[in-house]
Image (cartoon, rainbow, N blue to C red; front, side):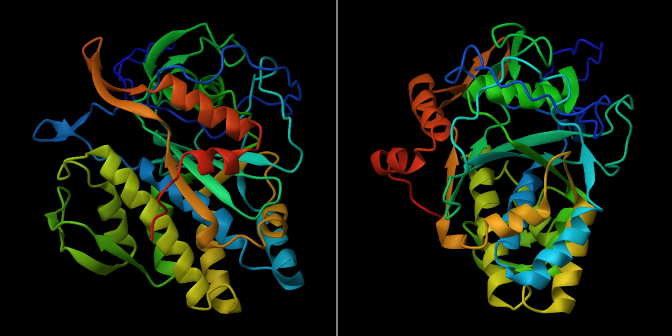
Length: 386
């Protein structure tokens, strides 16, 4: 998390993501946002010591589970599944993720296509009140773009240290505010400010938001009986009980998988290696659900969806039933994982930050906004995780 002091006077720079925004319906204004993509940017760093002066573990990787939840539901199908999920839909925790964002939003130009902001949180209390300081902390942001035909999805990870302009208010012009790591947007104005910041950075309209608590990571994975993940080098976890991850394929339960996707210091590529491991985890989660009959067994499905419902918080308009219907033809092979174009790390204002590649980011996010990701990927071949 950035050390930037928030307007509320919180000097810690740690993100606070309250799950409930001010009362009121989600605004419907849709004027085109000023500014647009290509601004330098970056999620915030925690900067809080947990042992030996090192930054405390970051839990935000868990946003991937939220994406997995949405995509796994695509595999369910059938009248029974729709009715069953409809019941769970009514029990989901909800938040006004778009509170106060009533103007300057990117226009929704393509019917059928939509974008979901996935947020990783280390909160243990999704029902914490908005004014409860540091009730939520988040340091992973990812945009999941679903084209109008709903036959594929592209997931773009936004590095938490991306250097961006954080607007001065949820309804303020994109050019206002101050520069900080993108994760500092939570400390400045909670989840709605993060939404506003991402929309200003990318010029992409966000249609839905899904946040997941790290505690749900273990439960969701265990509900599937664990996952098989590729360990690219032997390491010892920096967290108790200091598990050893040996090079090669490993079967991991929820606690092990959570530990694995938190590791970064042991890798030369740092956070970028960790983002790769997150992406590999998501695909493994989907493959496991599809190959073991979880989604066709009432008992297994109940356990899985119960764990999912307990772990996620969604925006007020999010419909699990709609997602099931829209994602019926989506499969793991139709996923493409990307990272927001950047030039790597630089030191700015005494902070190590990730600097956006303005030209490449502009091209990517313009393609996303126009639902032309297939054209962008044809011109910029992406190696899919296997």
